[in-house]
Amino acid sequence: MVCTSFIFLLLPILLVPTIFLLHRIHKDYQAFLALGPGGTPSTPTGYLRICLLRLFTIRDPLEPPSLPLTLLPKTGLLNSSNLPQRHGPRPTVAGIAPQRQMTQKASPAMYETLSTEIQNLVSYNPETLYEGTSCFEKHSTGMFCSSTDTLTPTTSTSTQQQQGVVGSTLKDRDISSLMMSRNQQWRHRRTCNGEVCHAHPSDGSLHLTLHPADVKAVIERGWGQRHPLTRESWWWCYLRTVPTGFVMIYAPRNREELECVLKIIRAAAWWVSGEDIEE
Image (cartoon, one colour):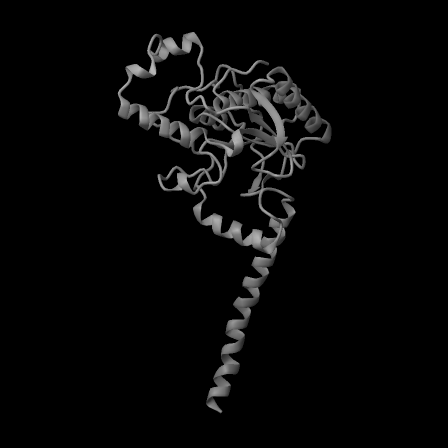
C-alpha cells in the first residue's frame, strides 16, 4: 500500500519534466525541418546527426580563424580598401547542416541574378571552373575548380615583393618546413571535390571557402560568418565535413552588395583553385 502511494506520488514528478522535454525536442525538430532541404536528410536520423554535431560547433562564428605560420601566402585578396563595410545589422542565421539565413533574404530576382553572375564567372574561366551539383548542399548548383593540385595560390608581383618571396622556389626552403606547409595547405584548402561555392535558393545566401585572412576581412566588414563546424583542433581535421575557411556569405540585397559578394566569390575561387580568376 505504501509502495503504491509512493508510485502515484512520483509519477507526476517524472511526468511533467518528461512532457516538457518531449515538447522541446518536437519544437527543435520542427525548426530543423523548417530549414528546408540541405546536406543532412530532413528525417529523424538526420536530426539526430545534427544533435550530435552540436557538441563540436565553434563558440563564436564571428571570431576569425587563426593564421598558421606555415600557411602560404600570408595574405588573401580581401581587405578594408577593396571590401566596403556592409550596411545595417547582421541577419539572423540558424542551423548547422543546413545552415540558413532567416532574415534579410534575397528576392527571387536577386537570386536569379546572382546565379547568372556565377554562371558567367564559370564561362569566363572554363579551364579553371565548372558547374555541378553542390557536394556540400546536394540540393543546389555549386561552382567547382577543375584542379586543386597547386598547393600555393598565385599572387601578384607586388604582393610577392611584400612577402619577400620573389625569386625564391620551393627548393630554397627547408624540407621539414615544406612538409608542414603542404599539410597546412591541405587542411585549409581541402574542399569536397574542389567545390568553391554554392548559393541557397531559399534565402540567397552562399557557402564558400576562403583564405583565413579573407575570412577575417569578411567577418570584420560584416559580410558573413564562419560555419559552426569550422573547428581548428588538430584532431578535428580528420573528422570535419567542411574546410576550416568555410563561411556563410549573407544574401545580397541590391546591386551594390551583389558586386561585393561576387568579389568574395572570386577570392574563394582563387584560394581553392590556386589561380587568378578573371572577372
